[in-house]
Length: 470
Image (cartoon, rainbow, N blue to C red):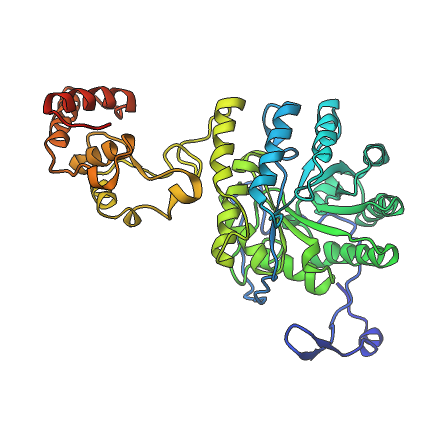
């Protein structure tokens, strides 16, 4: 980052349309073509836990009017698990279209192009004719990969443009200038063919933001002006180092990165996208932070399936959107449950039971005091109307801690009893079943009771007491 006095004197004073104040850009951001890689060893000492330093430089919130979700289930998600079949890809793509709703809240989905199976899936998804999710691709910055994009007729493609010195110097064996010139050549080829490039700034949370990322983005905006074709920037937190804390130092600061790309590189909000990983449990909060500070798009994967600890879960950002904007803008959240069931039953992918919104135990209670609260009013221990939004009413699992309330709640839910026929914890049926449960654990049982065995016991007790449950 350098400041030239004569150039600064001649920079125009302009009206900032966001805050209606006159402003002047203080710096000119040019490539800092260092001789040795800057790996921010003070923040990333490999033999120690990474550090989060602060300089208390605060940037303003800048939530765009329109924000949306994009999907990498078939790209980053697929490279971390067994490949999907073509039929599975097409089915999931159809469901993403349904989930995104009439306003296309799931804006795009990216695909690999390397295998015949993936290319077949791309063609079949394109044949669906959906406006959203738009079918896009992902390639390395190579002519060979770009040929695949041309052959298929993509309107937009992601291009891997690794931006940290870890990648530029240590992996690519290039200097910053060599890397930038290499990337710009492929991106120009892309624009020459009328294809919109989406530049994947890999490892941005270990990159020199003002010495490389901002100057690179400025060059990309010059190409955009020349070709009149949008050039998108995807900020990739490849290792999950990003943090949302106000005043944290870049490159770890998510607010600082988004501010730099938008304000200092001049990239429009609608052309900035965040791609997070969950190595430090921050994928969701960092994605939400990117929205808050000026990023329109957040890239996600179904159920967070992705490299290492995974990507930002798509379903998480659906509910983050609703909390930020006060509504779903047409998204059909019941599709999330349909997709979870499809993954478990058809694909054979076991979703961890504690996973929010989709795990088996997401809204299951085992504590008697919680079950008692649910019996009185489900709002007490349920995050929202999960039956309405996910087709999953709150349920109770019965164990030694469930109490009478847990047994009553289990009976009401599993027999779908209408309100006027629901049992309470004082009913004889509930007490009889609770006695049997207590006997099980008094005899040494340590596991939760299954629904099947509970139903056998409840049916037997109901017959003995003359209670109608159906």
